[in-house]
Length: 427
Image (cartoon, rainbow, N blue to C red):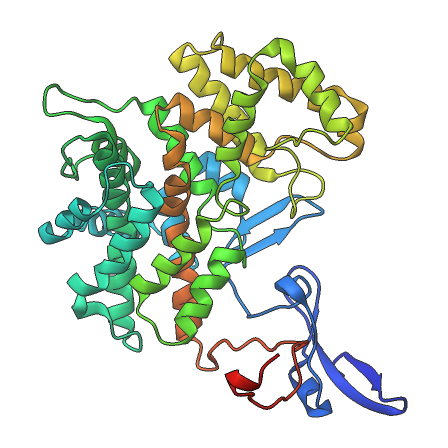
């Protein structure tokens, strides 16, 4: 017999609610029948509410587990690459050799954007934030690729998925180039996905540019580690927008807009700002004492989801070490400062007891800076990586025959009914 919970309300009335088990993680109480009581549940931030059923990503914050389609993130980061991870998120399984080649070939074949799309950038100020440009240009893709907007057609959805994975890096690089006053670079499809992005970012017409394989691998890992993270704010935004039947390009633009918020996508940017405020290694002990006294805020340590450790952080620390060694930046003052922060946080009982360990944002900010990527582009990199997660969740939702438009309820605490008063009679 299925598990149920019995809810008593209004003193003596009861209602039975079924308990739905997941393959991993806690079970959930199906409260859909609760509306029969004439009441609704109240859950600001949806912290205790499962808004959907999904087979894509699993997180156990207490155990420090992150699985894409059941595959541990540690294994994917070590043995896989970002495009293969994209295939896993979209299709649910690791590709065989032929499928991998075909997927990579198809993605790389669509990296160009419509030439008229490039003219959108002329409408922005040169100092416009790259995320502002991303929201606008990605949303405009629906005006150029109208042959893949029928969300009820699986083939249209597939084409849109490939186009987004292919073209987002091109648009991201164009945002950077426009900020810098540099000409746009065309993609080079003989390069790997991540090497091609670095080429579009940093090559110039004046000289040959060969992406450093160590740096390519580092950025590819950053993409992999940020590809999906379950039902976070931006993914939920994409799902909510998509539930209305909006086209996929508009939905991804909505996700980018949500990610732009400093509480979501700006964490690694906050780490670099903190390092600038500390100034030098000599100031670190005093700063950490200020953290204990709650007069300073420590960014890049601890995590609202992972209560013991962030499984992505260990991978990013290794990647950070590889990049600093490759570029000879071990003695750079800012990186020395960051390493001193890490040393104290991992050895001081105050931080150990409170589980304020370095998280993925702490190391990724350092790596992106070492790669020459400006702070203003950090959230753009995040959006690039997360696009495949967003579009995978969107596709899963649209494919569900039981999909309903999102319509959260509210607890109204405003004025009761009152009558209009003419302006001449108001006091």
